[in-house]
Image (cartoon, rainbow, N blue to C red; front, side, top):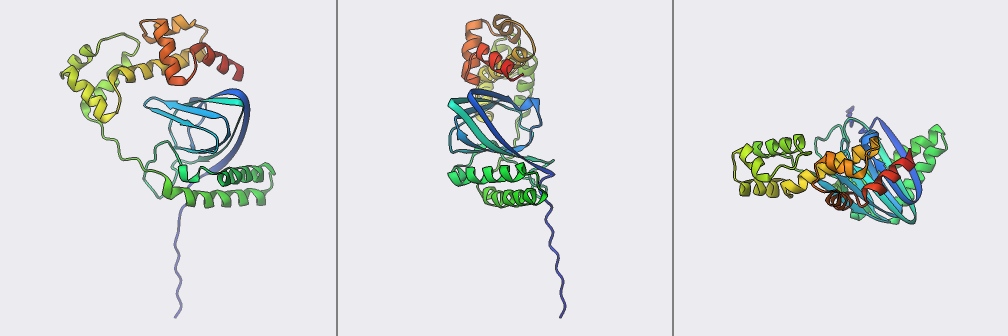
Length: 269
């Protein structure tokens, strides 16, 4: 008896970009300046802090990090003295077009091993040859890695914030440059200040003041990067009540002072 069976699986990427980067001492990278693609990053040398509003992830030598598409973040790298990493960037509208699961940024402890670094280096060098056959082999190696990594990616539960919290976040974003008390925000929302803090703690795992500071620091990074305003002027523009507090908060969030951040960004330009 004759039989024919066809099973299809759409490929999960439009392009695969392999990256090998090397720097000395410090390096700054802002994903807002380029496409926010799905990425796997294997750190060979140095340490890094990835930051975004509501997210902070630290990683070091021998660790593998995953970032989902669409996440805008910045990275501060520190080397002693070298910084080196390999990255695979998947250019697509969805990480896996047959799968609606969402994945948060995360470290993949199981795959944080020397073999992964060697594989990423091999993929990069195959692309580096420029030969078509080598590129096809590189893509094949990537898919083998993807099949191994997928079961270890922690999925992200759908986020369903309450309407009150969404209004609070919108208010803070719109008024981040003013030093309003949280009692004013709770009055705007017609809830108690205690209830306001509870909402942020339960739904965002943070406080409204910490969230406002994150927004202010993000605004500060933009001003430091795009203007010649003094650090004190940037502090005022972002709504901080003192430049000293701005510097302390900025360093807690980015791992460097505003001046160090500006110098690092200018050295890249």
